[in-house]
Length: 84
Image: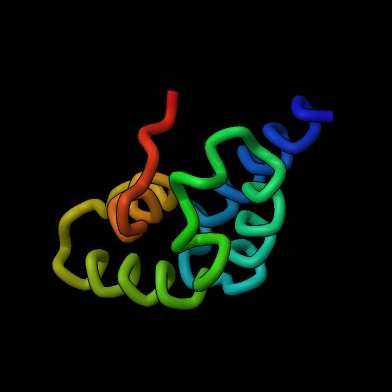
């Protein structure tokens, strides 16, 4: 089952790269991330995918490449547990 969730997460991450403002991709990523071992370290994505998307959008507006959605979620999560 873990392999299926990881594959689904990779699919959503690829969709976000192609269409970064697609709210359905962010929601899907949040749903499958709940099932992964590192989920606690990305609580911001799980609880507020709209906020993580908004920050991602603002970072893209600077012209610099944004961090990955998961890296951003870890950064936005207070007291995040490092992923291993």
